[in-house]
Amino acid sequence: MSQVLASDASGDEPPVFDLVGIGFGPSNLAMAVALTEHNAKAGIAGAVTAHFLERQHRFGWHRGMLIEDATMQVSFLKDLVSLRNPASEFSFLSYLHSKGRLVDFVNHKSLFPLRVEFHDYFEWAAEKVDDLVSYGHEVVAVRPVVRDGAVVYLDVVAKAGACSDPAVVYRARNVVVAPGLEPCLPAGIRSSAKIWHSHELLYRAEMLRRRAPSRFVVVGAGQSAAEIVAYLHEQFPRAQVCAVFSRYGYSPADDSPFANRVFDPAAVDDYFTAPEAVKQRLMDYHRNTNYSVVDLDLIEELYRRAYQERVLGVERLRMMNLARVTKVVETADRVQATVTSLITGETTVLDADAVVYATGYRAQDPTDLLIDADRYCRRDEQGRLRVARDYRVVAAPEMRCGVYLQGGTEHSHGITSSLLSNTAVRAGEILRSVVAHRDDAPVERAGLAATGTGHA
Ligand code: FDA
Ligand code: NAP
Image (cartoon, rainbow, N blue to C red; front, side, top):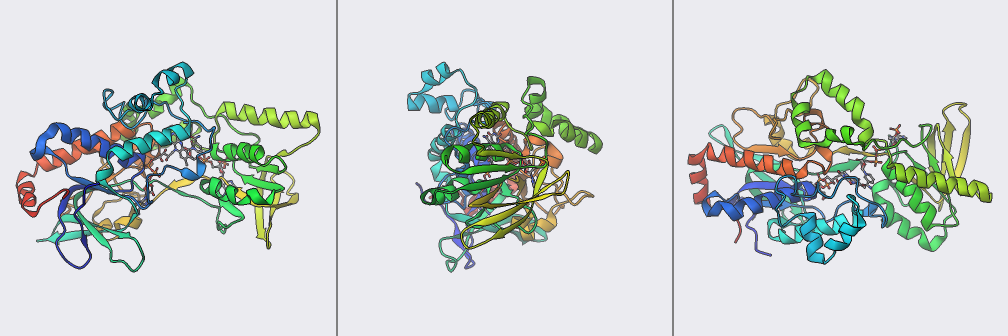
């Protein structure tokens, strides 16, 4: 890995990157790939210098939910590159070829690889652009560098190593903020060894293996909840698994072809230009392509298991629909969940080894990171960041730098904001915008070149 120039927070002038990426999940990985392909063609003068900062110590995509038999919910053709550059050497097909599995995959006749396989693909791609990333670097702030009243750079401040270590600063003309999703727990609930959010599943479940657990409670009726119910039921054959949710039954994800067009690149244009009321209507119509829904195959598998148990007279899989968990109390080595019926108000106390909250995620608020830079960013009447079609945050005129968002743009760009479907195309659009803004300011660029950029 080549050495990256940064400075500690002691005051030395750091070198300037055209782009610093915050977070290195699939979104900024796709960004790194897009600019690697761009730089291969652009020559030194046209190259975009960039560096990415990732708080995890190695690449990882929802590792706590890498259940071995779980499959992707998006076609493999919506990989990091193919919809932008079908001939890319970073495609899932190139990955398969390099692993000697291309023909086997074709014979499998599926568009939906295993999640573990797609994770391996991401890792393979991340490895190829390893020189552009610093892992173990948590971004804690983005500070504007103001000269003559204008914000000429953004200093991205990251903590690496021990808390006592000085922060490291990466200076950028543009930042691409892609911190992903953060887990949602109901108000008043904190995760612990016995109360988990779904994203922790595999780590937490592993710790219970030695204890022969007798009961789990799983809250929620989305894809995560259903996968977890199936997983715990299978992995802990002596445990009862109680699925608690307020719906009547799991609702199937609408992945029918016409509805699926809501994930198309063109749908972003439609959504972006639609009046606010139409945006809301679109979201309401098509929420069931993604939120609080489950793949039909999995619903049928869970029903098959539940019915089989009824026949056999051993009901380990217990569906507690039209219900909510209204109280959770931890004891020394157990947890007691009170389940309240939404119809009768009747309560049932379940004594369990763990309660798993598969209660979803929310986009991380970029404001938490932007801090000082945030005051230059414009907001709409609902307090949401105003974001242009090229994903650049609309900013005050004195802001000369670009703040781009990958994620957190559902209000402006639609449902693909937090998903993989549009990642390849979006990365290309952001890169084009970065290059276009740079080419519009050649004098500044020449000035920056003198300060030195890039990698040592
Ligand atoms: P992602 O969350 O993947 O990455 C963000 C990265 O930023 C993380 O690595 C994080 O550590 C890092 N980070 C955050 N804050 C930081 C900071 N301050 N400093 C440095 N680094 C920081 N979608 C889809 O289209 N098809 C699918 O099949 C699935 N499957 C799926 C399964 C599960 C279990 C979940 C929870 C979600 C999905 N999704 C999905 C949706 C999911 O959001 C999507 O697959 C990607 O993770 C989005 O990629 P991002 O890079 O935007 O976020
Ligand atoms: P989700 O779809 O948002 O579902 C959350 C569930 O929790 C819903 O059933 C919701 O109730 C319930 N809930 C929310 N708050 C609650 C509360 N306070 N009390 C009780 N219940 C509450 O979340 P998810 O299942 O984690 O899915 C998130 C994203 O990850 C989706 O994009 C999904 O496709 C993706 N994902 C993909 C895979 C895969 O690729 N295999 C696996 C897992 C997740 P309601 O039913 O009332 O809305």
